[in-house]
Length: 205
Image (tube, rainbow, N blue to C red; front, side, top):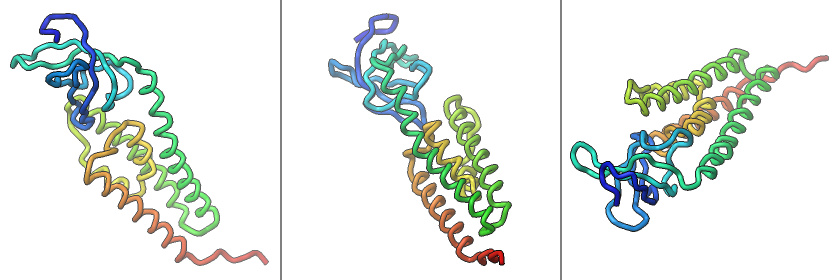
């Protein structure tokens, strides 16, 4: 294993990664003690993912603890392809729902204000997720989970649905994920109830 100041690169696998806190552990390919690694040690681009094969330079921090620095992906191309496929489904779902809302407004089944409310709050939710992800990386002020949930509950969940995948943020943390899907379900049921309770528009004679 390389020591502090040694430029020799070693191979390993990202065995554990906490994307919310921005750190994890690399298991050396030759076995032995796992090394701590911070997000700042990775190159710009796709976020680190558990199971990625990497090379790194081992160094020591101010407490003489081993950590991985100058991390490089062995094959970054598969990681670069993942986001498009993972984002496509949420985008399609959000677009389909918003198109349905517009259709219901045009048919007179729900108030006209509902469509712009969903649209504006979706944009706001998307922005808040991006801001919170950026804050998590820099260690600055965070957007509270309650604020994210309230924006989604008020109608911004389509934007939040897309943002979770685009920014890879709040996709696995519990109980946040469970609450998010409860909010989505409640929102869809509320829209269905509103639609069912609205009188049919009169037919032209």
